[in-house]
Length: 452
Image (cartoon, rainbow, N blue to C red; front, side, top):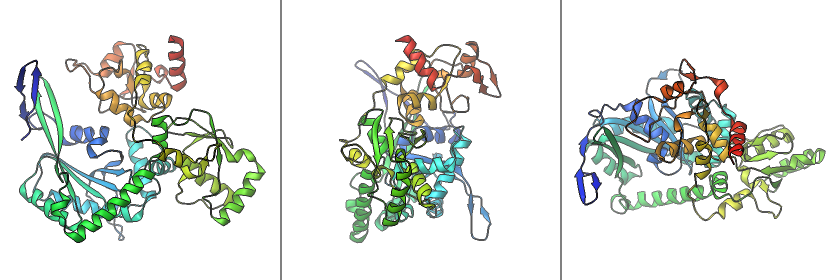
């Protein structure tokens, strides 16, 4: 049992534990959205692929009606199957999750990209499958089909009966680990606090639960996961560490190319040497500005496009960060490997933009992310939990609507963000803010410059 106390100097008052149902919180509208906007609940560095997924079909064309709550992908290239239960999980919850794991094990990199594009578009951040595939490649590198067939399973619920806990412990002896996370709530006056506590597996549990054969297999998979984790997310590590300055020149190296590709690429580049040049920019959405067209690209997406143009055959996947190197011969992948661990981001640049965001105007999480060189998701996560973020109600999603996960840093505020914006002079039509009042990336940069 977890106890939570409210501290006032030497006084510690125990808070009242309540169920999510007693707190008036729903499974889909609340619990699911918390996880979607805070994927760290699923472990470090998880990319949400989709939610409420039900596009299953067998070889006979008959569509199953099962609906998967959340599907994620970690940087090692493993899928994360998430089943949510607001209250105590039913005794067969683990069976349902295993069924989903078997179903998602058939995903490929391309079908994951389709699912991600559809989900992002549905949530007001439209992208196409090509962009989604590039985002997956940059997040987890080239996906290993063997790891895709072995997804992680995570059950998140208000509690677990013995049928579930006993089965989870027993299955761990056979290299099938079901992670159990308990979600708990406490009431503090009018405020509700929620916590996530991992019940199983506990640290070191494999030492006394796995059989020798299963332990050896788990260690083999763990080594593969560790190797892929080091290789993945090169772009994000470089941006977080600010390893390269904006405008740093990069050149295309053909060392990773096959012999057939190299001959055709060399001829294609000789026709226009600008095709082999790019500059680096600390923009996670497109860090390479290719001189061939002046457009910002993700490294893997650009290399696939270049190979396709030069050879007429676009590869399904490439590791783009090993194809681009600095003047001293270091590839982006090599530079990322030299970054000493994960750095904690300084959000003072975001705070500076929010401080000058005027009444009667609004912007989006995506536009703010673009001007400070990060992604919309971590920016949104920070705004949600930051008391220093001013004027947060003036940040809307890409569709110009109030973000689903918005909450006031001051729990005493009861008005909605739309009500506040309307009082500032912004009109809404069917929940969409007046587009003429939007501040895009260039507007934001000019606004901050004018206040300097």
